[in-house]
Image 1 (cartoon, rainbow, N blue to C red):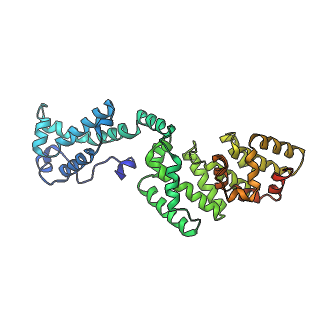
Image 2 (image 1 turned 90 degrees about the vertical axis):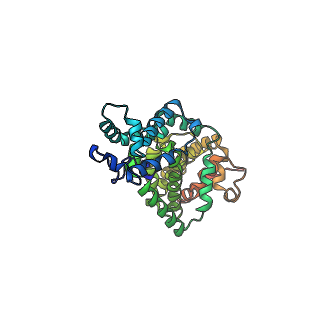
Image 3 (image 1 turned 180 degrees about the vertical axis):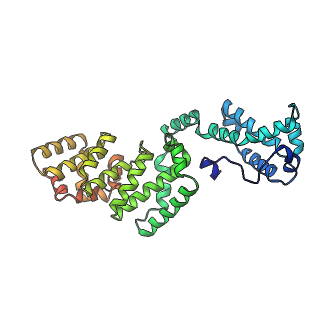
Length: 330
């Protein structure tokens, strides 16, 4: 399964079949019959009642081929109906890898599967927070040792599962695949750890990669990237990111306000933008109030996410911004 997820559908080298070795290669305990028997056992775990007609048809084709190579007798039963039994068996063997590949595609990566995954992700049953919180409970400490653990987990995943080849092959549907979610969550956590440990250069690199492979940004990594750019005073990159994502939410407006103040100071234009932002999102004032970071119970999800993604560090990096934000408040 690890090889399949890497897009490698080749059979083990020991599994070989030619017309001259047909009977020997299909005798008991030889590599090819063992391989096919093992794959048939694995396929037996699939819930066939949940499959579409197209998936069932493809699974049946692969199953029949595998059954034919469980033994020499099986091969005779499956392929003897053809004019040249040996030639037909070898031809089927030569197409076995393609058959496995096609079956994997129909079961997981076809347009129909991706469409169904998108629909599930859009439904309330796809609880992103539940998945994220489960991992965060394990990896909640902002420490160098936690960062080391996350790095080690990612090294294994990137070597065995989410390889560069896998990412390249499925880049358009990558963030919709269930098996990729733990990887995205760990990458998100790594970026957050780097940010909290004030390694902003490394955090920025991680976040930029994340947003490239998962541009829909289910995990709101853009918030943390905005804050990295502010801390590093990279206004050009920040403007490009704001334009790219352009979601008119609290984080976007608070970031735009902080960026304008950082570059222009307290003047009539910045005051006007502050009033407009407060009118749109009155709770933005909580960013400047210490109590907001003690009790977020009654705050909106947008504000919680923005604060959890490092908003306070970004605002504190701009001298006088917090005082200016709450000025004129009664």
